[in-house]
Length: 226
Image 1: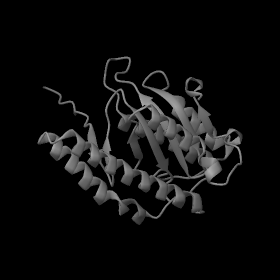
Image 2: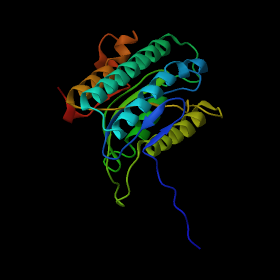
Image 3: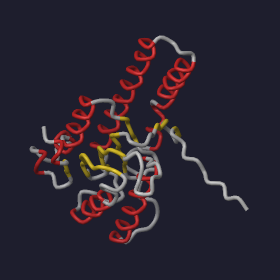
């Protein structure tokens, strides 16, 4: 009997389209299930999907590079606005299942983020906020068994393990995290710098601390000190 092994997709979508590729760096945001109203998710979804469809179509048609580059810039611009709108919502939200900034919860999330460090990924920076997490990471191309590594699998593992431990600590049951992640492929060094700065300054921008170094949920890999 032949066992059929499912093939991982490099493109998938929930409310937002996601594009994952082994050996790629990402900026990811994941939030508590009740951190923002459910209707907030689809706001930019159609626009993003339309732009992505146009990009793929014109790549297939081998359209001019400048035209495709223009569509990609528009796509990233819309996605940036989407992230800014969500961060504003998250900063204002008082409705949270648990407080992720509680020292024990922060410790749990930090531990799960570092679980695959130097095995499937390299941690670059993260910020654990009261109701969401910003994470900059590089996904390895292959794991120790020479299998391709996908962001989707890493996120499922990290969210599942952190939810189990936090629920146990909080004496609660049920879903902790919103299923949707907000992941952006990091394109170059400038984008990497901006992603790190955005992540580490999140507690300051939210009015939680005056100096980002004073936020217990912040982490920066020493290789990326600027």
